[in-house]
Image 1 (cartoon, one colour):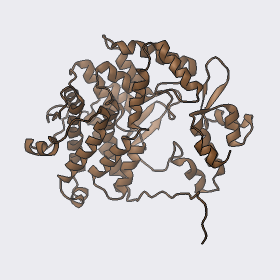
Image 2 (spheres, helix red, strand yellow):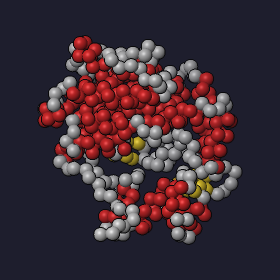
Image 3 (cartoon, helix red, strand yellow):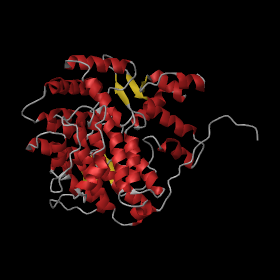
Length: 427
């Protein structure tokens, strides 16, 4: 198959063993060796002993083997779940989840740590669980001038773009770019920004209008009120855990976008807006919508399982399953599903989703991703549809602020090199 044919062929998430060895140009025994070393992940096929192999892992191995030498070997795969390329002291990814400055995110959530305390930990490296609330520092007149002109999005997923606009407007209200970058008030600006954006969730609530979060309210309390969800103990626990578990996750695409903007000297608000826009794409923030749509595509757990088998038979991944960094399961997803299941009153949709998750784990050996865990808990809480990805984005802002700060301190311009693969022209 030539390059044009290969690019025109529909992309499959999984390949058969025969397709894998043909693409890599290796023997079957070598493929099995790559799997045993953890270089290529595989999943079971239903009703057969054969396995399927993750396409992106195969392409990564191929890129490494064809790279010439030296740094090229690392560079060939570093930008796609590959080798670490940026040193950081913020978050470390371990088999049991992310660790914020040495503190397990899952343990912090189980200990009922507040999002505010975890954010300050990411920003300062100091753990202080003293109850605190963030002040926006905005007068009612300033808030009205900034936000009252915003209309609810046509679909809830459009809230991300609205939040990007609000972020830039709020930044412009704080003076010039030079003043904001050199003013030394990053944490104050971050608190104001995150809490103001939390009020934007009122636009996707039943009231469809911006809901300012009072200074004395916590982020979890304010978000529930903005979303028009009762602030019961179960909902407060769930919202706090959601925010804490997703506060950072190392070098995700949106975080990398924030760091690239920071390396060029952008203000905090421009960096966050860049990250928000990166999160608004169909492969990131919209992934939550696709998983929600999949879960609503059948009325029974058996129907969902049949849909999953159809995806699998086409070589496509099952929406919401299989995180590349957590082959043995994502503890964040497990905790979110656990929080949903322990609620005394279950939503009807969850009665078919729980058995479906168990069936996929048993039949294919695949574990829920964090997006699936987030959606399950959101359904249990009554979070509006098509807004879970935006809620995740808000939680991640704590990490973006920490990464912007770290990137500035490094003094390094992020400017990766490109490997030219086009046709050579005449000199």
